[in-house]
Every structure is written in C-alpha cells, then in structure tokens.
Length: 209
Ligand SMILES: [Mg+2]
Figure 1 (cartoon, rainbow, N blue to C red):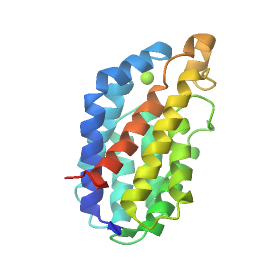
Figure 2: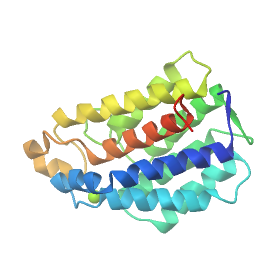
Figure 3: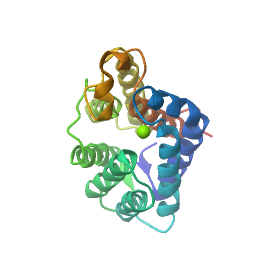
Figure 4: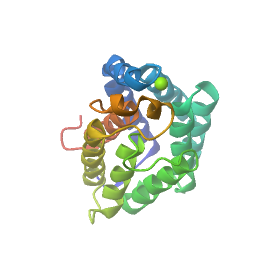
C-alpha cells in the first residue's frame, strides 16, 4: 500500500469505532479505577463525531480539520480535547488529497504535536501518551515506505506502551490522587489509543478485507 486517500482514512476510522465499541465497557472499567469511569463512552462518542465530521471533505487536510473541530464541538472532557487536538495537528501536517508513506509519517508526527499542545504528559506518566508517543516514534523511525507496514509498526509500539502502563503509578491529572492504587491496571486512554492504532493497522494490513 503506497498511498492513503480520504476514503481509506474514513474506513480506518470506521474500523477504529468498531474495535473500540467492542471494548467500550472494558475501557470504562479501566477508567473507573482512577477516574469517573466514562472513558469507553467518551471515546465511542468522539469517534462517532469524527466519522460524521469526516463525511464532507474531499482532501485530507480539510477532512482532518473537520474531524478535529467536529470532535471538540460535539463532545467534552479530556478525550475531546486530546483526540480533537490530534486531528487538528494531523491537518497541519498534510497537504493534498492523498498521503504517501513519507507524508503519512509527517502527518502522525504533527498529530502528536497537536496533542502535546493540550497536555504536558509524557511517557511514564500513565496516560494515553504512553501509547501515542512510542507509536509515532516507531512509525517515523521505520525505513519502510509501505503504509501497511508503517501502521503495523505503530500498532505494535502503541500496544507495548499501553501494556507498560499496568506497572506504572499515575503521575498525571486526577488519577495521580490514587497513588499506589493506580498500579496494576492499564491506563484507559493508553488502552483505547492502542486499540485505535490496531484498527488502523488491521484495516490496511495483509488481513484487511
Ligand atoms: Mg473519565
């Protein structure tokens, strides 16, 4: 796979919604350990908003802008700000209707920069950044020019990063008030981002329909 189009990205989002919906109650249970237990509901709502907002645009830049604003305008809370910021960042990193492998890497790097505008969390803080940062590092670090391989590298790194949050103590946001009690459970945001990256890779990978 050498390029990615708006239609292909919309299909990736659909796959993300499908996989996240399957895990909706699990994600809310993870969030309930150190938070208000709404993460599954919030991420499903945000992805639904993303898909609705993606429908009009005919190029990637406009589509990512529509998605970013769509998420922020129709949902609330940290998921809205962070996922919305990710797509607005993606928009800043792309021109044109399609993206090749190099542009895909730039796009995701720019997405991460968009999230970083809205949080100071980094790897080790037990947040979504524990999945997103290594995923983007793996994607931009691979020599591959094949989009399916790049997304597969991102998915593997995101999952590994999410697994690593199990042993971590929450160091950020409201969850840090739980201290030692936060150890032993995967971070909900890291878990959902790992699932989103897995969906992107599944959609475009060798087993994709
Ligand atoms: Mg929550």
